[in-house]
Amino acid sequence: MNHRPLDFTQTSIFPLLEAEARKALSRHLREWKEEDRTLVSDRFLFDFSTTHLTGALAGYFAEALEELDFDRRRHAMFVGEPVNVTENRPALHTAWRMDPSDYLVPLPSEVVEYVIRMRDQVKRLSDRFRSGEWKGATGKPLRRIVNIGIGGSHLGPEAVIRALENENSFPVTFLSNVDGRHTADVLSAIDPETTLFVVVSKSFGTLETLTNAHTTIEFLKNKLGHSGLERHVVAVTAAPGRIAEAGIPASHVLPLSEWTGGRFSLWSVAGISIPLALGFETFDRLLEGAREADKEFYYTPSAFNIAVVWAMVHLLYRHFGGASTEAYVPYRQRLALIKDHFQQLFMESLGKSVRLDGTLADYPVGSVIWGGPGTNAQHSFFQFLHQAPEVVPVYFLGTVKDDHPYPHHDKLLIANLLAQREALAYGKPQTGAFDYFPGNRPSVTLLFDRLDAYHLGYLLALAEHKVFTESVFWGINPFDQPGVELGKILAKRIARQLEEVSAKEENKILKFVRKNLKD
Ligand code: F6P
Image (cartoon, rainbow, N blue to C red; front, side, top):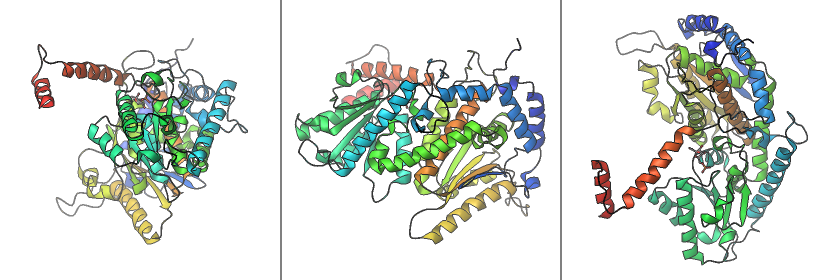
């Protein structure tokens, strides 16, 4: 039986792939200046003309994916096989955006029934909230949301809401950190009588969320008394049995499936703050865009598949170009938080050394994701991107238009994006020692015509599929996060230690903290 490769370095095509990558990287991007390498759908453009990913190289990467059984593994994820192998669970975030009348793939009937039931419940709750029908303990309509959650129970929903909120939206505040000042700032800025608190925690075991939820319930009891609290709380969790022990009224508990990963959960009931804030119709458009991305990812041949090519570019510079970080630069202020969501989605999924067979990878895996919105980034870290010795691949995200009364601003915004892309790639001839613009600095441009729910959903779903593709290249499980467990255990032990009057041996840090906690 032929030994199936575990990762792309073990594929038989790898020597040709490596030779082509080295050859391509030895050339300057100026040599391809006249060559368009762009994947365009009707209102979305993915341009990788300013990268060293040649057609031949894309072909070799595609062959490596074939040897890695990519098509079957992609299908396995979509149909709900336990692709999250270390937790023996499916990863069915795609089920949340499926169209029951037009299946992409056959899904287990219990999954379809659950998703339809949950969507109906979320629609009913958001309609009741937005119509003013949902009254609080003192009879006033609830008009604001506080989302209590962290990581995937915070970042995706907030990134979407900040990108799409408008004059018809309801205000949402996100309470995530366990920092008491953050908690106090949030609670002091809201009117408890008209606020709905959404506690989102898949495990219902996350210290920050449980602490913030408990403090919030006590705050509500002080302000509103003990009756009617249940009207102000919705809980979303895969552990409904833990609600009561956390002192949370179990009025509205939306069960979250175990097969929904936290950082992949904004489409699910865990993203309920999105329809509450923006309306179910907008949420549905977000799902529709994601569904389009699912279809394209599922059916498009690798060399023309945006999510797959996005992964190829990452591997080219990570494995052969020595680039250990990638900068995401959204040229829209409202897309600023996309970088934070991508940071968790990419780094918590791909920041792994242990491969699917339990052995340690002897090659780079994953990248540090950083960045910030353009044009502001041009006045903070673009000096580094243009002239530091280290090359950082840049991913520009942008929209040509947006709804506001100042279209001339947008021409300047997009001109700056295209100028930075050109300067990084092609540089300029040197006229003096410090006039050093070597160029040959790669970037990818993801551009949609306008900032709307459909295109945002399309982009965010593509990013999830890029992560999945990279996990196949690298032979790792992108759907678990064992690396966060040790910190959680140690934090609980140290918190107990700090409660003690004194301790036997302790280092200077603990001594300093204990002394100042008491003062
Ligand atoms: O960071 C670890 C993690 O488990 C994330 O994967 C998750 O999104 C976050 O913590 C919050 O977890 P929960 O939704 O279980 O509170």
